Image (cartoon, rainbow over all chains, first blue to last red; front, top):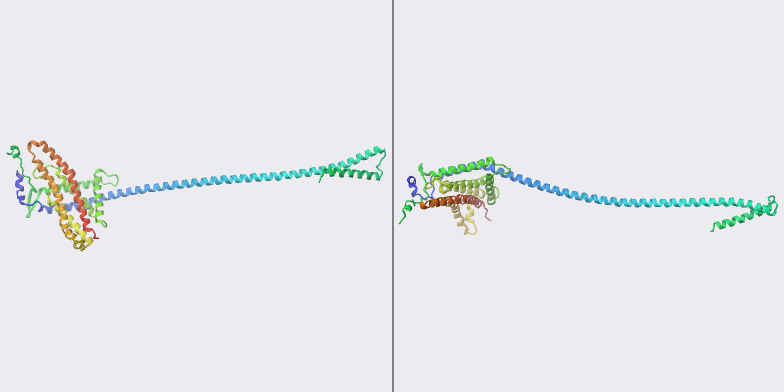
Length: 183
Length: 246
């Protein structure tokens, strides 16, 4: 076994004690460490940090969107409630107005009816008065004619006879008025 | 009497032997040197590949793994050291993890030699002491920078007094245990392969199975676990070095 010859000199060495290899190993490790620390790890760390920042931002965006949605829902509910209140108020107002209009119309109609009644009554009274006056004249004529025929004599010239007829007619008219206007 | 087939198996398991050469009076383990360079090239190559393709969008599989390591390292560092984390600490932790992992994974490559010519360089204390020396120097630097003289003063004034010798002892025990834990685990993996190789020749199908099974276990489980423990404890020691006494 040829390698035994190579390693023979090392046989007396304690394998826990370092030798010159230590210097070489240290140089190699320091070179690796410095190169990686300066050139490689910053790139990897930057990628990690950027990703975490992106994730954090996306998370934040999602939170914001959720908050906006909630706010929109609240606004919608508030608007809906407001609209309902407004509609209810309008309905009540309309009912009140309708009642008012109906009441107004009714009282106006009542007034007109009363006015018409009064006019009619006044006209009836006037017409009656006229009729009475006309009747009075006519009755006088009739009575005179009747008396003439009864006594076969003209009483037109006699003032005393005329007065008698007038009194008679006045008596008849007074009795008529008392009958038609019972107080 | 030993069976003739058994007698032909080389029963000498060599421990800590390396092909080596002498240079300016120092001994250099050539196998550890070139396997270290291979592992370093793999580490740098892998991380460069990830960094080149790194995107802040949907990451690829290698990027996910790398980011997981970096993110975890950052979290441990923040928990251990707290405020004003120096910019090199997370790269140190992550570099240690990936470098040790790639070193350990070299055990997967069979060299057909005993001792292994392509064995993991983490099975040689030279590499591990170099790593630990870096770690100790940096955490002492950070501790002194944060606490000044109190970095040493705290060991001498800690209460209760029984903690004082323990704290001083820790300054030696922590780096030593950090080194030897990694070394022992990876070194033992190599010895396991040598032991499996001692199976009698007539059991050679079992040898293949055992060799494969052990390499799978060693590189699939032991290698990442040891890489994790080493870098995790490193960060923990930075935490001890900067912790304030209450």
